Length: 288
Image 1 (tube, helix red, strand yellow):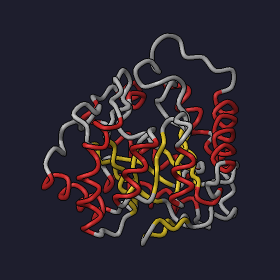
Image 2: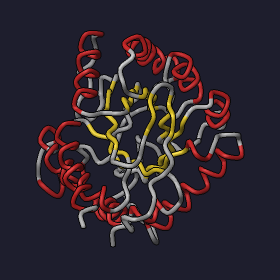
Image 3: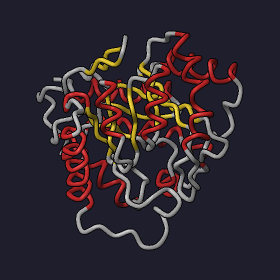
Image 4: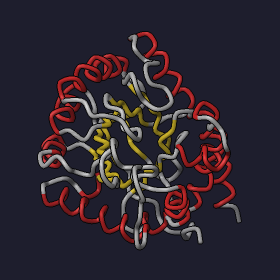
């Protein structure tokens, strides 16, 4: 069942000059600065292309811009911190100078990359590994940054290989996220600045992804804003039989449903389409 619509949303989180107000769904626009991301790799290799894309995402309704310099698609090989920093720092610096009305997020699992990005103007760390780098929590705490902790079983190179089995996907994801949250708080990260992501597609089958979506209220019950990132992912292709280049309609549909089950932030590529879908879903959810 959808969560009780009368329950209060999470408290706002201030990220630099931008306040993340969860009284309505928020949109996180994806900016992949990698040559091999699964749906848009290599599309932002020039400064002009980056700025144009960032401005378009904000104009369409993005409150957060999430920049990543390492692909986390299934089967992807990792890169070292220096390579990742070389990819993201010029972009972050350029966007920080623009002073767009959106928080700048660094999508990384490496503390060294997070440190460099926070110095360059990022105010939010999106860690898909939920603190596997033992220095990450301290870096975030020292900067007073906001933090997204995402559940992932395994690593991108191998996470979708072999049989993927959970005894209870929802309980196990919630337990892992709670453990990561507690580690972050123990290191000095403000609990009120932590957000949680169940990690659709990261070591999960289509059935797992659907179950997590249906039970997002269990993640929301942990007391933090819920980030939901289904954009163009393989499970949507399995459901619709659409190629990765033609999954934005399916993305908008499942984001609209996710809002009614507890999602607060939608991490997507096509911000405009998802914005309209989630606003309609949110209005219907709160109609008398």
